[in-house]
Length: 314
Image (tube, rainbow, N blue to C red; front, top):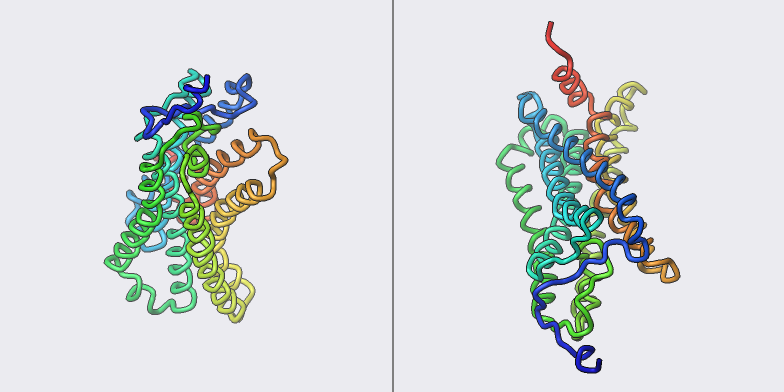
């Protein structure tokens, strides 16, 4: 027994994902809402992309950024849900070491990319409302492309150190991950090494990068609200604010479960492990499902185009 306990899994060939620890007998039932949310996320985001591609009138910065958000939601949900469902349905818990690290990289990089997209959307709304006459000259297609590229590169480069650190650590405790996917901190806890650098870096990313994004969005909307309340009529104020409601909705849908998940990890030590795993899983799934619904319902241009495609021609 002492020999087996001291075995080093230095770059182990596989990790074992437990799914939802403590609720293994309910995996099939848990899979039902998860599968439903995944289907809605896939259909909703593909529909958004289809409508924006088919309608030339939607080929403008706001909808380009929305297309990026839809692609990010598709990548984020697809990088996690198929493996989770295979655990729930077929008890297929093994995941290759490299595949685990790749999944971890995709999850956290696309979360960072989505945060950057929200900043880009806030920039678009700020220019459209506070400087409407200059919107088309400021946010040209080349500028939008550069902003999109910068968002993707930033998200990838920020998360890359997670992958590099995790790959070089020895894993001597176990290769069992008490989670439904390769979540970063769940993998870190398996390492038999000094992970303080990783922990400090994670805190810097959480408070500096995400904090700066939220600060910029807050400043942008402070200026936007000032411009809206300076409009002469109530109808004009409501109409202008309506162009921001979808963006505000997806920000709340994304950041609310993220903050709740973070708080539950930091201050919910007495909560059962399955609660943390379920919250972390919902944090990835719920925004991907809600984002296309919010934009489909709140954005008149998308709603009208969707109804036109759904209504048979006479």
